[in-house]
Length: 626
Image (cartoon, rainbow, N blue to C red; front, side, top):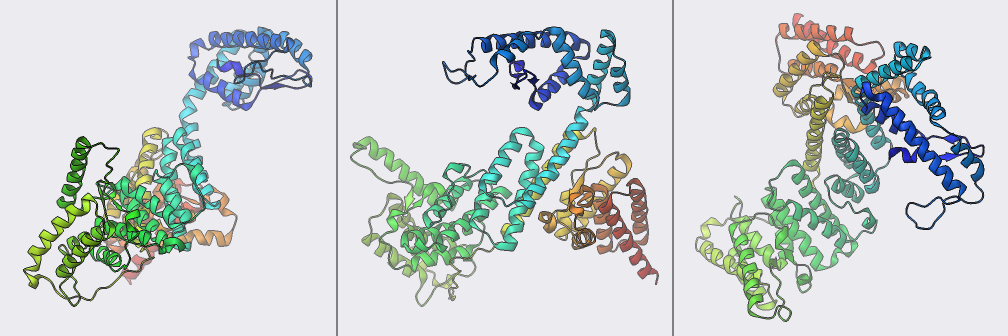
């Protein structure tokens, strides 16, 4: 029933208006019919359309056009020329509609076909000739549909990069683009994820890790997608809750790149909570530092984790901390004792619920008091670090006394009781051998600062993973339309991180594949978001093009480097850095000359990149000969 919406509107003269949406629908319909059956299908389509138009005419004449969603509602009011339109629709028959269909639709489609198809339509004065002409058009459209889709995806990638580069991004805009691309094309969805990760890294280096960038990154990672709750209101509780949600996602999971980014993002939210004006509350202060200690423990930064535990234990007032307790479900794998404590706490609650009325006896399980957990984690961390810190008195003794004080002062949870029992037993064992503990001056971390170097590296590597997946999908779907190598971004990343042997291996394979088989090639963009991935000389080259012509960015040939040109450049650079022989460099120079002949003159950035590679090799050879 796609034809039910064929008519969009009618003007005052009764002329039928057909929208582009319906033309696209008919194009899809035409691409799906078999060449031998198109005439029968088109006759059926025309017949159905005539019947629907006559039905619409009767509705208009009776002034009864029902609303799709509202019962007993007429869509047509008195200002509409009902009688004129109704009579015009009733006068339409199959011959008239077929003529319109041929002249206004099939003829327009033929204009986009090769000359031999156009000539067939010009001579289509009989039904047989028209059938042959339409069959040729359908066959051409079917044969070129993959090519058209490849072009659309390539242009879509450039459009995505341009939108992200030129427009300020927020959670709603990113979520809208992400959802739209996910439903339409998986290839472009992967590409969008890569570009937005590079965008976040780019903005962090310029302006720091703002709350807007945190929320954008969380959205890309699949968190906080409910835009109706998105608010610019900033308080410590909001940041703390966001961090808790992320911690729950990564708890007890293998640390993939995405999970490591989520951990760093959780740290950023927790530091954000500490920076808020309302973070003076000890409950927020202590809980944020405990969770930071857990996260630093997860990533192997034990000394930093110890410092955050110390910030908690140095706090004087813990009377409000029970309002914000350490949730067991947010904790990663710390040790067997914590797992045992959580298991016993749940078992105790089950037994208690079975023994008494649950409504009359509520007991919290799988939670810890912040101070008790901080002391426990502190002692566990000391057992795995080379530098065990104490002050004037032995830390185990202080911890034992402090733990006893806390147990007598505060109402403890089940988890606290069990973990104190485990802690006291272990500390009593360790304190007998004081030679294990060396004096060390405590160094405390800044309470509100995040080291973003590791986060930037993770964002870049995650972007490379998405770009590699994008290339693999591109090669799978369009391998018959273009020669696509899938390791170009991986080679670029290896070069930027000094792994020249790996980069040379990948680039050499890429060059061999592209020189031998390439008919068409895909490109790598050089928008500002890609700068951290690109070589300094390539960045300088693109900057020179802007100096010469500031408008060159609007031409894709000036912002994109083909896979072959980029692979040859990386191959050249790696051979120079690894001090390859003159013979090897001469062979690369021959490959560059072959590639230069394969590009037309309007491929500006490709020619400049190849010329740069050629100059580097020639300069090196002259230096050797001299």
